[in-house]
Amino acid sequence: MVHLATTRACGAACLLLLLVGACAATQEAGQPVGAARAQHAPTLPSRIGPGLLPDGEAVGLVQLYQGEDERQWPILRLGSRDYLTLSFDLLAAQARPLSIYFYHADYRWQRDLLPAEYLASFHRDDLLAAEPSIHTDLAYQHYVYRFPNESIQFRLSGNYILRVTEQGQEDAVLFERAFFVVEPRLRVELAFDAFLGSQAAQQVRPLARFQVPVEMSAAVFDFTVCFARNGGFEAVRCSRRPLLDEQPMVSFTLAPEEAFPPEPADYFLDLSTLQPGGRIQRVDRGTQPPEVWLEPDYVRFGGSDVEPLLAGQSVVTAVVRDAPGDPSVAAAYVRVRFRLVPERPLGREVFLIGSFSGWQVRPAYRMRWHPEQRYYEGEALVKQGWHAYRYVLGGDVALRANAQAMPRSENVYTALVYFRDSSRGTDRLLGIGNQTAP
Image 1 (cartoon, rainbow, N blue to C red):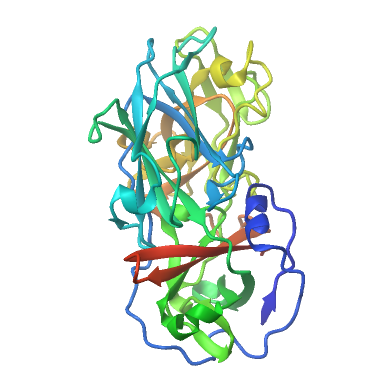
Image 2 (image 1 turned 30 degrees about the vertical axis):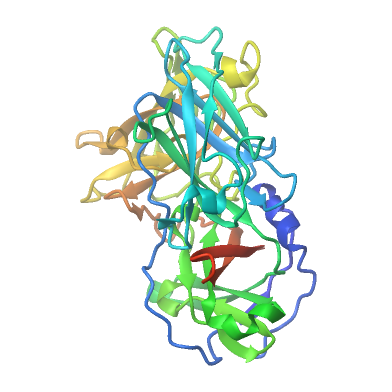
């Protein structure tokens, strides 16, 4: 059954509701998703992401969010007073000036255009000031950069990538992060088609529905819609096949084989205080940096972050309670020990990824198998705060718990509507829709 989900408040995704307006109507669609006629479109890669360069070894926690709310996704409305906050640490005893560059990309995250085509002023800016950490075993320098500003103004919507480098050296990369600039021209509704897929597991196909602007009515095949779940913009699923049986409304959905499988819950890491309790078994403050041992994670039971509480983001300043000052510079970095207990050896390399690492697979986060103890063990350097994490096989396949584990009871689905503008030679982002569904 296809149904329009009722909009509700959903933490990190609330900004998206402001962009597209609330979808108040609840109705039944007249026929199954995909029953309408669709123009043949080129086959798309099954997963599309920004392909960011790996973080440098000296890079600590990187946060990018809308305004001052660490939970908000990094989305700007073109021409508005919105701003994004980039907050990050360098694990260094002394601060140094850095540079930041911006790149536009099409919906496939292929970087395109010259800076003058998407930036109204300068093509780069400098980060000249940082604040040193205070009373921490591991010293770090904390940088904060907000944009748009007098130096950086955007003239075009779409996908963007920022790059922080050594000062004036564009190729001396410290890290990259993705964000979005949207023209809120479209009111996007989301519907969902739930069906049983392989192994009797419920699959979900989201459907995005919107009215094409009159001036674009002859170009419906120039639209592309990409879908993400729970802020997973690093691996969206896209469709270029419009359903045209409700004109002037147009719909896009995914092929059955591209439907979202049940979402295993992420694990929730609470380092708001450094003391035993909750999932923290032991804290050793006698080491530099301090070490934290967590309770083992069991594949059989899945993750502990059942709701999309953080939606892929880390939170520091709003939650750290035992720092001797502003948590942005007084929160400690600790070495966290993770253990994963499977029912049997998994047969492939297992990696730890999380919001504390930008969801990047890092060689240092490969888990080690201990045959006598029958568990995998790994470690990560993590700043105090709230974080989400998961385990992946071979660096790209999410490790799924068995059927007895509890999947997420609710998921936040996002639709990004792109239009191929031949006059600009790229894809503009005309609307974002967001709904919560099982």
